Amino acid sequence: MPPRCLGPSHLPLAPFLYPALFRPRSAHPTLLRTAISRHSSSSSSSSSSSSTLNSLPESRLNPAPDDYAAPSFADKAELTIYAGRGGNGCVSFQREAFLPDGPPNGGDGGIGGNVYIQAAHGETSLHKLARRRFIRAGRGKHGQGSGKGGMRGEDVVITVPVGTIVQEIERHDPAAEEELALRAYQALKKQKRRELLAQEQRDREAKKEAEQETEHEDELEAELEAEEDALDERRRKKNSPEDDYDPDADNPEREKWLLYPGMSKSEMKSAEFPKLPKRTRFFQQPPPPIYLDLSRPTPTPILLAVGGINGLGNPHFTSRNHPRPVFATKGEEAVTMKISLELKLLADVGLVGLPNAGKSTLLRALTNSRARVGNWAFTTLQPNIGTVVLDKYSGRPNVKARRHRYPSSSPDANADDSTLGEPRTRFTVADIPGLIEGAHLDRGLGIAFLRHVERAGVLAFVIDLSAGSAVAALKSLWREVGLYAEMRQEEERSREFEARVDWDLVSQASRGPINLMGASYGTPLPMQEAQSRTPTLHIAGKPWYVVATKADLPETRENFKELEKYLEDVTEGREEHPGGVEGAWTKSCAAIPVSAIKGQGVERIVDWTVGLLDE
Ligand SMILES: Nc1nc2c(ncn2[C@@H]2O[C@H](COP(=O)(O)OP(=O)(O)OP(=O)(O)O)[C@@H](O)[C@H]2O)c(=O)[nH]1
Ligand SMILES: [Mg+2]
Image 1 (cartoon, protein in one colour):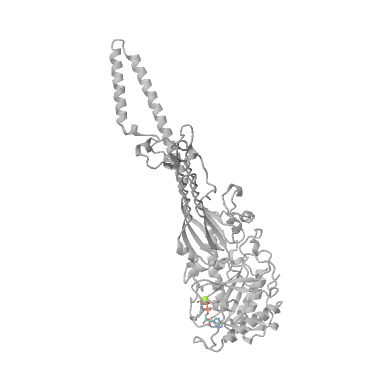
Image 2 (cartoon, protein in one colour):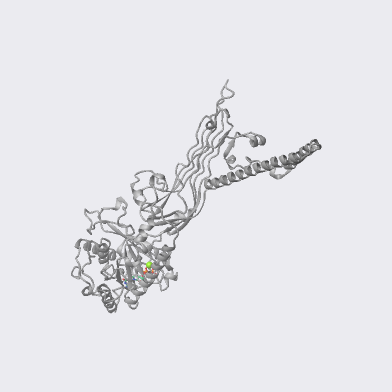
């Protein structure tokens, strides 16, 4: 269905909104009435006082410079996460009256807690996580006497906003390191044994030769000499550092044992341990590097770092050789990981414009936002998100919409169940700081904020009709956006990380936390692959339109006419796309004249946007 926009006949607007220039589309009277009543009530309610900045009365849409709400916001955070280590096993024996040598009854330690991550609606910023910096899961408690097992360490779930990208920076996995140390030790041991055997062989051969060469007369003398030599040799070997080598002394496995408290050092040194039982973690640690693109709410938490294995109590080691084992095993150290979180807000519409174009005023006019407005460049320093409510819960939605889908989801992927198939009741609008020429080179407030509109379903270019040629402004904005998109694509291509979330599997998993690398989930599917396949055009492939704002100001009409003519040419193919991108979306390029400060014309934006989102 084509985007809908209200025709001039339905709009009791001032002549500066050029109704004759606006292309007629199907109208939606219900929406119109509510939208108009909302804005007229909001502007009339506060028309008594007057603003110091312009001649218009102070209102919600023309607020005083200090009338704004600035919620805390951070779109980047770096966290160090610590999974909990496992609790130690306990060495203990039953003691009772008339039972001096009771059986072993040491309890097992508790398993360490895991660290998970989950994307949820409702979260909009990473500032709390950025302040925390460290996240620790609970450690498993040690086992106790009388067979008491230690408590399991508490799991931690990191909740992030939908649209967060998680990247692993570094990790320390003691279990993997231990495994390496053990392998190195076994290789060394093998080599030593081989050397010893070779030495013995050589000695035997030398002795044999000496025996053959010796004459009968001095046989006795030679034998004595040989014996002396052998004795010397043995003495020399004994004093040599090589002979000090005790194959078991630096066995890394010894480190894993825990001995009965109060045992002397020599006892500890001479203690003989059985073979360590082979144990695996209950959850498998996802292999490095982790890369997650949480562009949809995750129904269940995703595992990041696995807690350590618990130690075993001494009853596990009772055997014929060790009827009263005075040892237990220690709990395993757990994974430590450094991750970076980057939030790309997921709004349906992204407002892109030069500084002071009127983006924040437009956001205020469209939504209940209290974004800061000021007559100077870079009033907005952080992205603002507002929600346009279409359904007033008065029975049926004001705008009939089909399905609400996430813009970044691939067509065949299952979206979050809670939002699929529902009529559209709202959409979100992101207002970002203004862009200046060279923004893609990080000039002005730079590209840092362009990523917030990168994922929007629709782009709205907000252009100030009173500030020079609107066509030139549009071209310059598209140039910046296009160059940014190019840079992002380069980045994506050279990215070595592979995403590892299989969203289909994630949505199938009905309950319990997700272990991405668990055997039951099979080979992980690189989600990024699915995503990078679709947006070859990246931002240029998205539907867009122009909001020509400040239309109430004098002498803006010609500028708008020129803009509209230009956009018509772009739609018809007579002019190339303003960003010069081949194959970019030019299906129905429209310019909507508005006076955001008076709340006039903004309802057209709502209707047009819904049309584009549902296209
Ligand atoms: N006359 C008129 N003035 C407007 C309109 N919209 C915004 N303004 C004024 O333009 C100035 C800038 O508005 P903002 O909404 O702060 O502009 P912005 O694009 O968010 O600016 P930055 O955040 O700095 O990029 C303010 O003084 C507004 O009152 C409009 O429709 N008509
Ligand atoms: Mg602003």
